[in-house]
Image 1 (tube, rainbow, N blue to C red):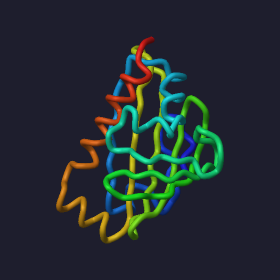
Image 2: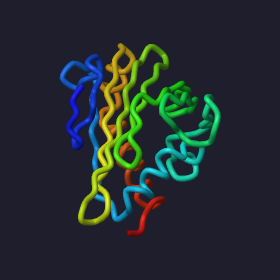
Image 3: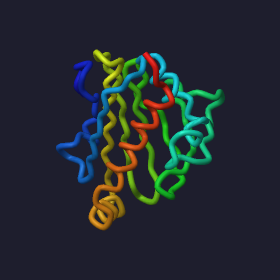
Image 4: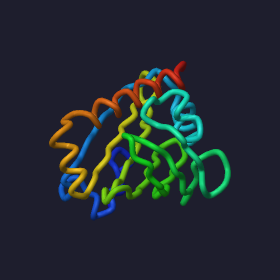
Length: 159
């Protein structure tokens, strides 16, 4: 894993150089990093502002994501159980999960910027279905991740 604050700490298996599917989106937001963080860890409320998330339930207790927390949710039409793999308040969060033979690692970075926060989200995937979906629906994940970022800014907005 890397340890640079401005890069994702990829588990070896999920490193973009090795993963068959990799998506990266970023947005410079007019939002305080603390507010961005609060919206990201309040997973139970994602469906209120991100249309590609539904039925979010924290399985390990509590309403918010925390280190090692497990949560079930539906995204891209698939129900997945994810586990928080990295948790550095106001800086980074990542989770991994498996659904339909697709192994996923989704990471977020929150970096201070002149506007408020520069947020980076990256996801890598393994599995035949992941490769097939990427080939048949190119740009779909990038599109929804950009919507996630834009709606996150609206949710957390105001500096």
